Length: 212
Image (cartoon, rainbow, N blue to C red; front, side, top):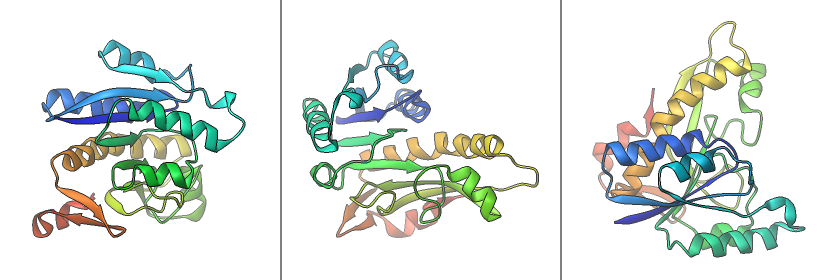
């Protein structure tokens, strides 16, 4: 039985999607903890109501990223996870922290990386006039939003779209894509090796890397 720790900063809608999928699909895995850097994160209540241990490491109380990351790492490691999942965790992590979880930490980013790393992705996509937008699941590396891509979901950018409308369209796909990617990691479908994603069955999963 694999063990998953999820990190959130807010409502944790992707965390909720993962929890639901794990329960409904009876994954061979347990979500052992949800940890937040904010005590007011709404997702903590959802996790607690679903019998998942919760913990808060309040980032505002730390003067350096290194000291925060050290305590966060200690909290995570108490749960001995096989996988750490970032689900709207709004912190830039230090290289030492990322290295500790190399090959076992995933993130989802609301753009088609490498386009629009960082914040405000939906408005930036609209300002750039792109025809397609979406979300990317990737392994976390020291360079922000540049880790090896696991899977992507694409949505059209439609005439008249606003930032909120486009965000909602992408988020719907995130809730489908992220649980699938987490499940496939648990099942051993893929791994990170030498800075690249390697699929156990390349032929079978090549077409699944991007989901329209």
